[in-house]
Image (cartoon, rainbow, N blue to C red; front, side, top):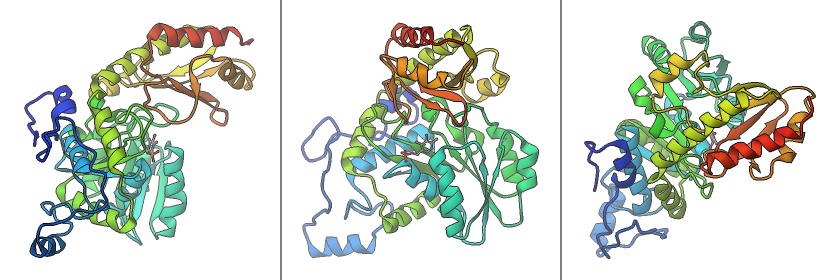
Length: 383
Ligand SMILES: *Cc1c(COP(=O)(O)O)cnc(C)c1O
């Protein structure tokens, strides 16, 4: 298996974790579309049962392991610089697994109050049902994080760039707090992907990505990846099998294929988003733009320390005048699609009227075409 770590990230995105098919010599990763695996002898099958769930166990059943899924996991361990990774059915499966690894009934976790909406429901509805107490705090305010810590607190859960407001959290400062109170630091790295940020560099214990977003990059598969120590991930693997949250070999294959172009896409997303942020910032009809990468952002030092390669493709902005201008603007777009989700090669936008903003996932189309669509839609607005 190609697990060299002396290659650069961009080479690893293509080559790490992959190997030619030992049976057919197929150069590209085959989709092992099978539920179960058969054995030559009864003794071999008996051994596989005994070793079920251990790292070197032969593939026995796809809910537990499968060669296509293993290649995706091996690649992600290299890209996130962790000992192990677990591919799961969705990003939400990885969110839930990360908490189950760190907390049980009677424990308490501290969670960023600026959080992906479905993660919020998980923490608000499902954690209390499991007996896990949750406090939401503003992770930009380190004092309030410290004040929320109780004797039974086990973990801090953060998103590296907050959704949908696009604030940047200080991971090194949060790690310092986590270390002094013996808490696990869990980082949802979906907005940046390992190309822009490897949270282990800042001490993260568990890292998760919604692979549906930048890793897949083409909006064609739902999946999630949890990365961490071999000890934590092997526990997550057996729990995943019990909860039945495995990814399909086909989705794993699509995500694996997507990751090979992650560096190329992230460079384009970042360049396009920066250009759009600058254009909007200078536009008379725009109230404000939030993109962590623009030079006048008050978080620029933090951003440069944590993501020197840039801030990716997510930005949000508001339009002056009547709040209904958000809908008017969206309906005037001719190329950009109105959709939730992010990290797609297509530019996607959605009005979030309750937050008073439009959230944009800037795609990989030509910069001129993206800017032209936003400019013509703004033309139709009266302020
Ligand atoms: C989309 C998303 C998730 C959930 O991922 P799914 O693959 O949709 O289940 C979690 N966190 C963030 C920040 C997301 O954007």
